[in-house]
Amino acid sequence: MITQKIIYSLALCIGFVFFVSNNVFAQEKTAEELKAEQEVLKAEMKSKEATERKAKLEKLKPPKPSGVQSIDDFASDNTKILESTKEINTLVPEMYKRTVGESVDGVTDVTVKKPTEEELIKLEMTIANQIKAVADATSKVSNVSGDVKKASPLAAGKAAKSLNYSKDVLELSGAELQMSLKVVKNLIATLKSAKNY
Image 1 (cartoon, rainbow, N blue to C red):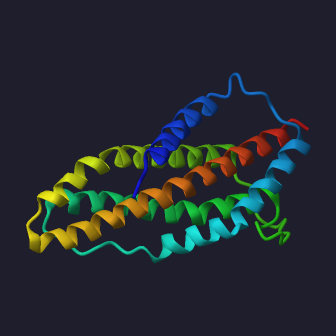
Image 2: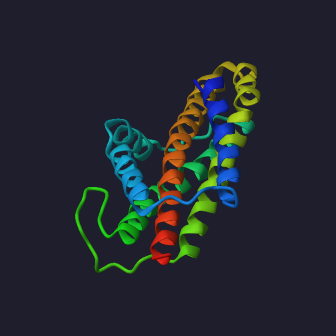
């Protein structure tokens, strides 16, 4: 069940995205600080929690129609979030490798073409938009939950299963997107730092 804590953390994350995206007041980090941050992010991306979360995301499959229109529409919207999160999960490690010159697992590859700042900023905005979509959808959970209770006995079971799918998508995607955003922000700063030397 999605808790108030998750809603609160998503709201904070959205505020953070827009504050940090406006880097006018943000202090630049040194190359050493960025490298240290990358090590922390790399450990986070390889953590047991992150690995399990990605595995759960990969296993999620859209439910069959429940017969309750609002629940089915909600699941359909959340399937789009799921697909986008999976796509971002593929892109972020690739951008990491292209920017840093090694994979998250530490395999060096300097033959890849570094991404442009524009590519990374575009990915950052895609992630930020997805975080907003997750927050918007999370705010609708309680309204849609009421429709499960109103459903006919025949549809209620399918509707509850569909709603649980949506909650899982939102909870897992929210955490994944927040981590991806931190990684991409580090990569943008790393790319800018490299240009300054």
